Amino acid sequence: MPKISVTVDGVTNEDDVEPRQLLVHYLRETLGKTGTLVGCDTSNCGACTVHLDGKAVKSCTVLAVQADGSDVLTIEGLAKDGVLHPMQQAFHEKHALQCGYCTPGMIMASIDFVNTNGKSDPTEQEVREGIEGNLCRCTGYQNIVAAVQYAAKTMSSTGA
Image 1: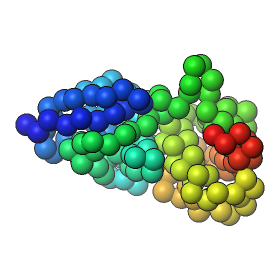
Image 2: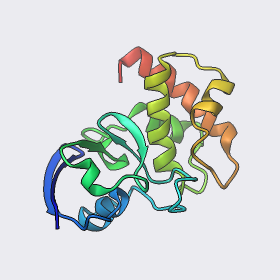
Image 3: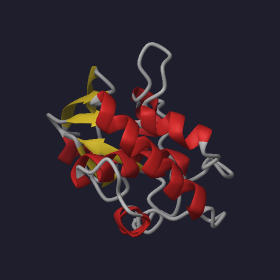
């Protein structure tokens, strides 16, 4: 079995993994990072979205061995010293949590969208296109879009 070294949420881990093991399963089953969810196993829903070296990826499409030497940020690594990331806070304040199943992946994808978009005031259409790879089965996109727009302003003003 190949040995990998992956830094997850600031902690470096060295583990032997099956060559075919997906990153999402490595995070959940080996490291106990259960905040990253398995939704569809086909990359359609985005529930498994994490940041790999600073970019959002669907961890059900990445082999654990492909993450060797990389930094992974999961939903569990966002809050610092008990303070929620501005995107987490915005989802809470704008009632975008819905049933919560899509929330971790949606937040991770939304942060990547705001960081990539670079605007403090993205339009509704820009937000919808930016997170289109993540599905909310509660059809609660209106509040999710409002949360992302709200967080974009906060992230811009705080540099988060």
